[in-house]
Every structure is written in C-alpha cells, then in structure tokens.
Length: 244
Image (cartoon, rainbow, N blue to C red; front, side):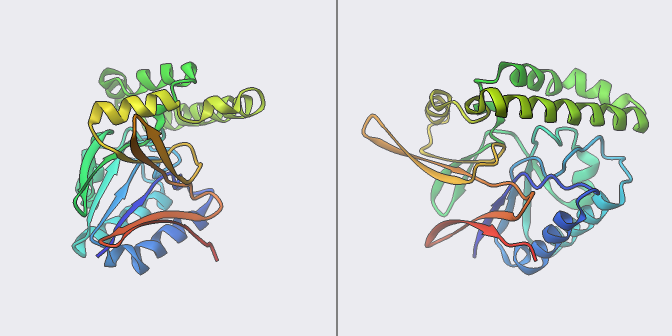
C-alpha cells in the first residue's frame, strides 16, 4: 500500500475549488492508502477549534470519514494553522505530530517538517514564528473571542502577503531554505532524507556532502493544482494533481 504526503493546501472558503479537490482526493485516493501525512498549512488560517466556518467543517467531515475508514492520518502544524488543537483531533481522528518527527517509511528513517524553520535567511519571519509558537502567546490567542481572532487572522494574512510580495521583489532567495541549515538539520536528526513543504517549490533535491548523499523532498502547494508524494515499497514519486 502507499503512504501519502501533502502540505500547503491553504483551504479557505474563498477558494472552495481547493476544498472540493481535497475531498475528492480523500475519496478517490487517500481512503486506499496506508497512511496520510499533512505537513502543515492545511488551512489558510485556523483561528481555533471553535471556528464554525462551513468550508472548514466540510474538510473536518472528510477527514473524519478518512480516519473512520481505517487510514491513519497525521498532521504537523504549519505557520497558518498552528492553533489546531485537541478538539480538532477529537472531531477528525487526526493525530498531531511534532514539527521535526522521524517516521519509518518502508524501512527508511525520514524526517518530516513543515519547513519554515529552514528559512533562516528571513529574520523577520523567524522572529514572528518564535512569537506565535510560544505556548503563552497561543494561550492568550485562544482566550480571545472568535471575532477578535478573526480580525487578528485577517491582519496577519495581510501582513504576510505584503512581506512575501516585498521579499519577492527585493530578495526572493531568502524565501527559500538556507542550505547550511538544511545540512545542519540532517546532522542534528541523524537522517539522510527529509520531506517538507512551506516554500511552495516542489522538487526532489539530491545533496552531496562529505561523500554522502542526502535527499530533500519539497511538497507543492495546492493554489493552482494539487501536489502529493506517493511512497510505496517500490519507491517514491512526487506528482501534481490536475484540477478539473
């Protein structure tokens, strides 16, 4: 059977076609898989497990249908959905994993990450990341009213969009991973293969260092089309999913 990896779907009610494709992917492919790993940014914004947004509820029902069919489903927080918590897991059957989890895939140790921690050339982003990942800050955010969290999320999305557009114009290279940090991460976790998302630059990179080959697999986003890594006993393949 196949193990599936996806990330950066950015599900949002303003783009229901992405949610439609995700639900179709679950019904047609994921329900026949060994496991599904979602490596962050499943949602464009997740302001708390009490969000009644109907488009999000569609996705939660699809995930519950998947896990109820017996497919183990795992999720790592991204930079857009770091407030996903216990209620989400209880409602969907999805298991949360720590960002930087090692799994065994057909006999190989593989590091799973969202990927934003590798982008250390963007100090402004890393500073924000440290703030919003702080448990005290998250406790305060969850204590806010739903309307306050909605307004905060809108401001954060607008700020993120402006920052990305500015960096794309002036220094696009800092939006990608830092190669030194990639090698340091391989060493720190004692693995030679990692899978991550975040950068929206799908590719399979073979990195030569000290007479050793490391593999970095980058998942794509779902803004224009889907992206999935399929891994079975024969090997792995990174594929785009056409949107009808």
